[in-house]
Amino acid sequence: MRLLIPIVNFRSTPFTIDCLRSLEPELRAFPGSRVVVIDCASNDGSELALRSAIEQNGWQTWATFLPAPRNGGFAYGNNAAIQPFLQENPDFVLLLNPDTLVRPNALTALVTFMEKNPAVGIAGSRLEDLDGTPQRSAFRFPSFSGEIDNGFRFGPLSKLLHHAVVAPPVQEDTHETDWVCGASMIIRRQVIHDIGLMDEHYFLYFEEVDYCLRAQRAGWKIWYVPQSRVVHLISQSTGVISTNSTPKRRPPYWFESRRRYFVKNHGAIYALLTDAAWSLGYFTWWVRHLFSKRMNNEPPRFLRDFLAHSTFAKGFSLRT
Image (tube, rainbow, N blue to C red; front, side, top):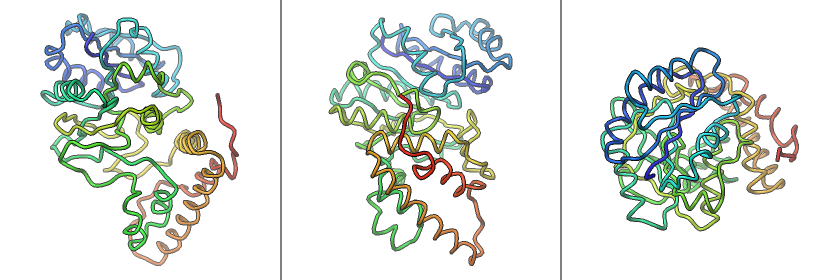
């Protein structure tokens, strides 16, 4: 098997079907590949709709539907879709969000790059809006310095800490990076053999950051491949973070995922100092904001929710 493509669906069936339709012509270049659509207990008629779409469009030769017993999150859904097919030894696993549309040759560009660069374990596509506007898709790992900048949001300080900004400006060239967005992320089979699947204790967010860090620590390189272009209808499948609407209150799992990432990968003291730096910086920014006329585009109760789920309140214990 050349490609195994899991797509995790949770009450996003129309987007999932559109994603499958965009995949159909691209998979002709990869005969024998398999797309696995797993529905995480949507309980809204998704199972019937997805099964019908696969059958009516004649996608059975390359698409499989699997129901999951619960909504365990992004990592859980992908792992449940991947595990039954690992015995078929796919060359690559391509994580693909349901709210994506693959552009022509997007898959070919990723696979070709991976075949030419055996030291690369994970690569990500250029994500973009429908009109082609690029989205930031290649990132630096979250760090103490980056959280200081993210909290304070102060021009001179941001210039000083520019090397730590998690989401740097979009680059047009193929380049090595720390981590790539899981909305379109290809993984070499050997990486899964070396480090296993994703950590299912992340419900949503930070799971691909954690996975890329694990891969990097195991000696694999992470690259961004803009020749692979994929439309990402941001947060249509989750409704959490959007760039073109009024921000919603962040769900508890976002904060829990962030805390898990820092405690698990950097230890208790580092996580505590990072939370303190961000909280102080954000409070300072909030006070400055009170005396300015800038529109507040922050999620409601952001600081309060952050503190409630921080190491100050929740400590350092993690689910294992």
